[in-house]
Length: 343
Ligand code: GLV
Ligand code: GLV
Image (cartoon, rainbow, N blue to C red; front, side, top):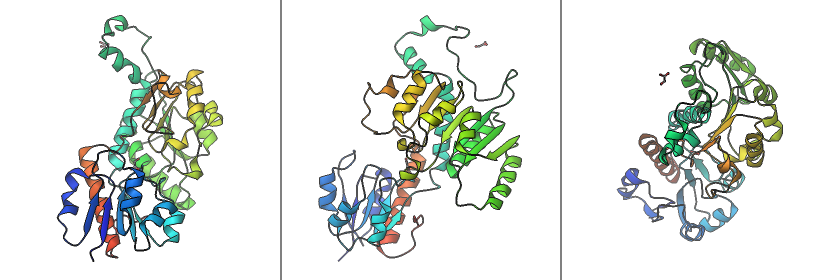
């Protein structure tokens, strides 16, 4: 009996890596949208390995539908908010994910959102598209927003990172090229204090920053010109950015979220934008995505730029992620090495 592998979405140019294998039985959801729960629960029965996406909840229900032979769940994502790790651990199921391979793509998009939010780009591009350029032409101050790089009148720029993992550090490396002078961050509970200090000294020198400091969330909110949300999702970070945090931010500051929607309280952010506690926001993720309508309070805010969760969406990175997800599932079903196993 060959092990059965279920794939919850066609993996495009990476698919032949699975299709040409003669040592597995492959089942793939045929449509290019999140797979129906009923289809998944039905087809996962008897599977040894499953490749899932962000929309596929891996929980007790999933485990029960699959059966005891299930060895590995491999998600084509770095985030794993959709996977109940207690459930996979209880059933002895290994979990694969795709860190590292998407770091650079997400850092690119994170910087892009900071720039777009500061320059009103959620709104201005659509004005051009609807033929309204003539009405706005070169007003000296009307279309202005806060600048990311330093200027003559403003020689200091501080960015803050809620969470300072791989993507945050890759983002900082880019921002230094934009003239950011100071960086603050929270987190890194896994590093001991000494290595954090050594690492900070090294990063400060490498990026020629005037300052790099680990602080608490309050100080980060108070001092940052741009706050980047780059923590994992899940219970521990739920609504970390809520009304209290947003009220401490500077009036010309920008909030960028490229991690998980659940970290930012949408209602509080809409209020913060509407009442101008902060200047703008750039979001790649929103609570309750993807079914966000045009009447959503954040969509209605002119200074909120929202993208439909495309941080890792470059052709190169998606191919690398799919390949990693495949290598993880193959390693897992045959009891071998998984290149990126979540432990
Ligand atoms: C995308 O959000 C991912 O977790 O890879
Ligand atoms: C802008 O286009 C300028 O010439 O300053």
